Length: 426
Image (cartoon, rainbow, N blue to C red; front, side, top):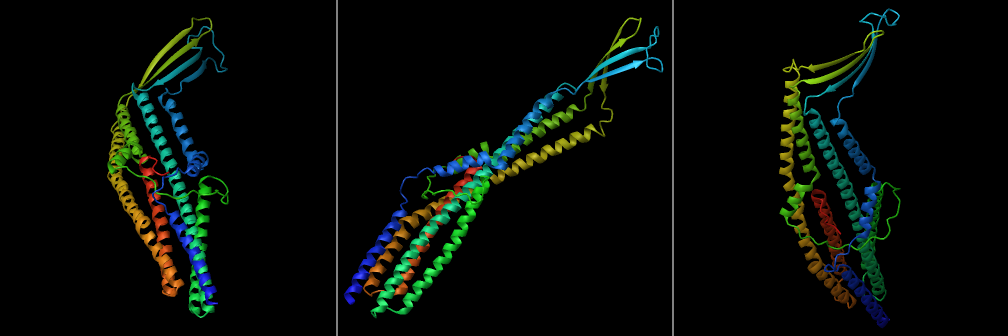
């Protein structure tokens, strides 16, 4: 009986070692980074289907359509008038009796229409950057949810593997107990640990379903639509400097560009407010049809004088100037916070990268070797079951920690992408 037990323990130990070696193989950190085609496809679908993106795109079209209208003269006026007796019939021989057709056109002071068109163009450019901001926000949220889903699946795999190991530990403890080499409490401890892992698995499944539902919502499709198999997680390569990221953000960050376009618009609005101190004009052409008398033509010019400029035009100029100053201060605030918004995730990238190397090259392999050693020692009765469980829990903890840090690393890259417009994730 004792020989059969030793044979069973030896076979179980080999099986455990094979599982551990497979776990180490899954953490091959030095492998090349495979491009995540699935994520690219999801991003493309989001840009094509997401209602917020489509609405922002239509808002840009609406703004662009107003540019030509802003540069166009006001609508002309046409009027018809008849002058005669009380029955509105013409009185022959009376010079004042006539049919009159008038055509008039308002003419703004030179330069006003051009400024109005430039203001509309600046507003359209600002709306285009607002669309870019919405687009990046949707892509960022999609990628964050995608990595949350990847993390839930990877942690589920790690916990499932640990659960299988613990179940095998319970079988070994039960076999040892039957022949008088183990304690019943070892079996109970293994069962308790299995139950704890089942609780973790339930939580991970909920997190996985939540992330999948959020992805489907961003893609504007039913929340239970399956996403298919997910790729392996790996550490993306990152070799940008902080100055490079800052220069890129200055050139293409939506918040910066929107502020800049709003400043351009308000500068033009100040110039337009100054033009309001000059008069607008109106030209009118008239045609007189008189029975039995020669036809007459008339030409008239009008000018609207800004006579009450201290109550109308001057306050409008002061308001436009104050708005411009406010936008400039807003732009300064955006620039002052941009560097911090870049530096904080940049430092986190460096820290997480070092942690990934530490976990992958030192802690996880060392914890795995310690577990392998405790398995062999437990097989011959040199180590108690509590030490075996402790080593197994250590491997589980650091494997999960590795994937959590890897996910944070990728999500931090996504944050930098939203600020700079650079594609940094695979």
